[in-house]
Image (cartoon, rainbow, N blue to C red; front, side, top):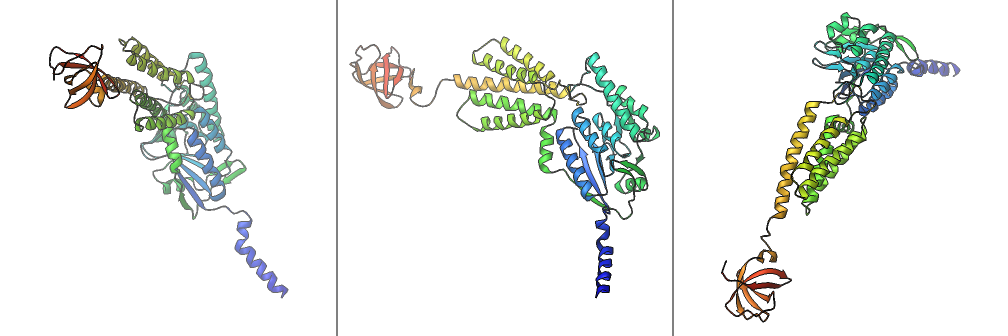
Length: 434
């Protein structure tokens, strides 16, 4: 009996023992990673790395990014360097780029790879609005980022001098040039060739060195959840800006022309979405204040019937606010399209001017329905006004009253001056006009 127990125990150990001993999975997690390097990407990558450490042998990020926030880039590179699972950063597909902040992510990865037809670099710090930072501050930021790039590249055994030039000289390299300069480890056009190229390589993880063994691997694709895709979309600088401005305009139109709810509700939703997107960006609140003030001033000019001077100041405030809205620490690698900014200001301002003019014109238009439309019309007295009586006006009989209290005889013509409830206040008219 004891012999049977021992045999059973040995068989059990042989069956499940490797799992108890901590044998790693053969799953290679492939994760598409595109868009701005920001808070959403940071959150997503942290979640993926945590999941990969528990469920996968290696994680491959298919990277395509124009750059993004320094703060998010720094946090992501820290998570990669501390990862206990090999991280491959693969610039893919053909035509993709790892620009600006994306170049730092590639340098931080255990394996750096690119697909043919891709590019990497151009990591010189610029303001979100597209301009260079001022000389003193720019030198500090550039030196700090250059040191960070050298450190990441040196840690992974890559050419730190060439990597540094991506920051100091905005150097940009094709996949072939990057491989020749020793900035990346391999070029691969598909997942199969990528895994074949990295198989057998030694990588330094947070808990020690390991040699990659990809025999019998299983690929698991991980897609970004829809919730994060939506947040990533609205947190793009241009989209967040557009939502905020459109929302403000929509609310203003609702105030100018009350009675509905669609415009106001839509405006409130757009403002909330825009504000959320801006909250995830390095925001300058002075820019927001100038943006709102500019729109309000333009509205006031329309309401008071100004000659356009206030509107000119409002447009100037709108332009300045838009230019400085992203000028804040942490966004030195976040590129914002000046062309989009200028186009948005022109189009939105023109649309606002036309729409607001139409609304105000409708508000000032003479009323053509209800009792108020009778004001200014003429009628015929059918019962003497002494000073009250009855008149026939606009196809109906109305109770009427003389405005000055003087009597008006039957068959005389009168003109309606005002309406008091269901009584028309009239005066004698010399000519029949309707």
